[in-house]
Length: 208
Image 1 (spheres, one colour):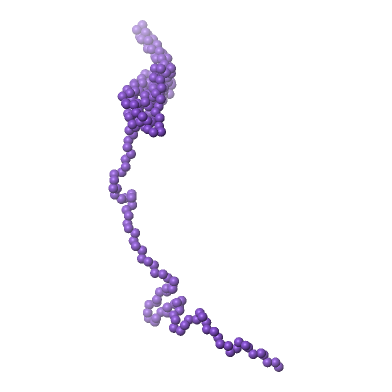
Image 2 (cartoon, rainbow, N blue to C red; image 1 turned 90 degrees about the horizontal axis):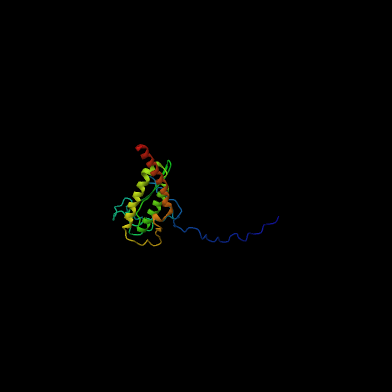
C-alpha cells in the first residue's frame, strides 16, 4: 500500500490579516450595547455629519401689505388730442345723425381734439348729417337740427385753439374742403324743399 506525498504547505507560517483589527481597537460599525437598567442609546451612523444651525431669514413684509413710501401712481388725464397727440386740444364731442324712415342712428366722437383734427371731424360729420339725416319725420324736425347746432358750437370751440404740432410718429387729419364746398352737403335741399312744400300746402288748406 502506497503512502501519500507530504503536503508542502503544511506547517508553513500563516501571514497576518491586514484587515484584522488590532488588539483593543474599537469597531466603528459595532452598535452600542445597552447597559442593564440604563437608557437605550440612540443608534448613530459613523458617517453622520453635524448639521449646521440655520440662521433665521429676516422677515420682509409682503409688498401688498407693506406701507407705501409714496402715494399710488395715478395716470394723468387726457390733455392732448385724441387723434394726433397735439398738446393744444379741447374736450368736446362731434356728432352725426342718420335718419331713414323709422331707422335712426346717432354717431358721436368724444374728444379731446386739436384745432385741425377737430375742424376736420366737424366737416366730415356735418356733411354726413346734411346728406343722410333728413329722411325720417323725427330726424327732419328734431334730431338733425340739434346735431347741426351742436357741431356749430364744436366748430367754434376748435377755431379758438392755437395751431399745434402732432406728437412724434402721429399725423393730424386733413381738414379738406369746407362744408359748403362739398356736393353731398346740398342733398339736404331735397328734403328741405319737400318740407317747405308740405307746410305751404297745410297753411293754404287752413286759410282757404
